[in-house]
Image: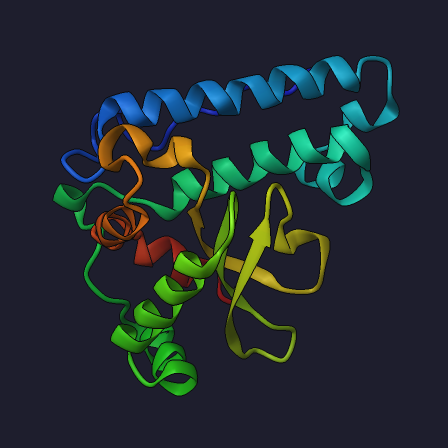
Length: 194
């Protein structure tokens, strides 16, 4: 059964003014292209009958690249929440306690996340992850690489591919990251904690 482009968890314009509807639509076109290419690559392959996550974990080469980009992007959309609907702000509860334990406070987490994102050469992703021992950590992955191929549990992702921000912020990755923090879905991040 072919993979399909999943629906957004909100309207494509709901992230405005931080991410425009045009940016979201352009990003979705890239996501659709990855899914379409993956379906073509897996036509007749037993992997096509599994979940997208299973394909990411088992595929190699071009099939891995397209599957991982599709998975990472879907995860990214669910890491965001419209600011008008409660996105942004700070974590609460057990997540806030974990952030305080491992980073000191959310401002330090954000600053370290941003430094990692600004130092990332080229395209990729920055992640807040939970290590197998429960610690929170940050990770940067190039291109389509993703924490789900290892032992870390991804909690939050920021896309560092230019199509995630170029229409809105041109070459200013720092302004995109500032906008990103206004949209973080801390409830979704907390729900992913093990």
